[in-house]
Amino acid sequence: MNSGNRPVKKFSEIYENILDSEGSLSELINEEFLIHDVEFKKSKIGEVAIVTVEYDNQIRKLHTFSGVLLDQLREIKKHTDKGFSIQVKLVKRKNYYTFT
Image 1 (cartoon, rainbow, N blue to C red):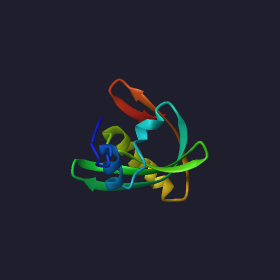
Image 2 (cartoon, helix red, strand yellow):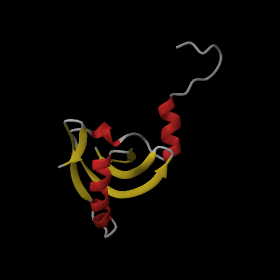
Image 3 (cartoon, rainbow, N blue to C red):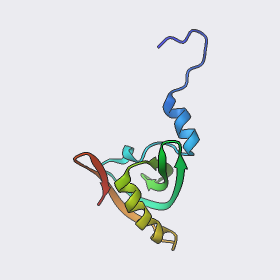
């Protein structure tokens, strides 16, 4: 895409900065990882979870708007708040994401 002399940013870069997130949790589809912390926020398009994960020896903050994952993350948060890390695998079932 030609922008002339103007610098270009992707929308995803802007949006992720608003959420204080490095990307979407869906990037880890079919992967196992650890959840260390969960934070819930309200956004212009609904509730979002910011999840601190450890994957491939890196700590990242990722977001999700998925209703099923939000429900599961509420339960996970009860345990992360007590100091536990939770091992999960993110999978896609038909038209939604879930942890196994």
